[in-house]
Length: 105
Image (cartoon, rainbow, N blue to C red; front, side, top):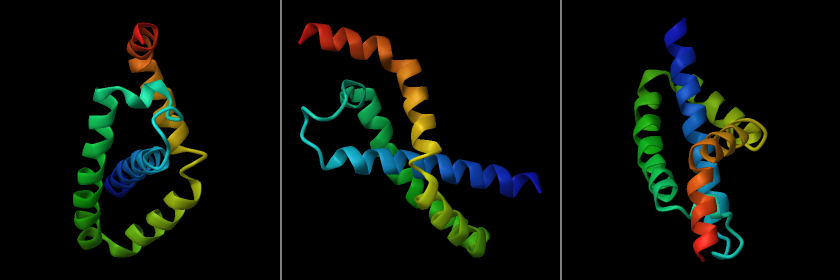
């Protein structure tokens, strides 16, 4: 019972990273927050796409009904749950670096 919960949690967290990358992909560089312009954060977001695709491929064969349910629930609730979680995590880790880069430019 614990394994499907952990797999689901990992899937939803990766889906949140994909949502962040997608929402800032369409904006101009001036509109993107400084935190998401850091090279390390950009690399994490690029890697999340690859991880999401491989994770989804595994998940389809593991339990496809749970995959579809989590995909629908994740897309509907990501803005209120996982995106906020990743914003807090990234700002806690990279806030000092982002403010130093902002002061240089």
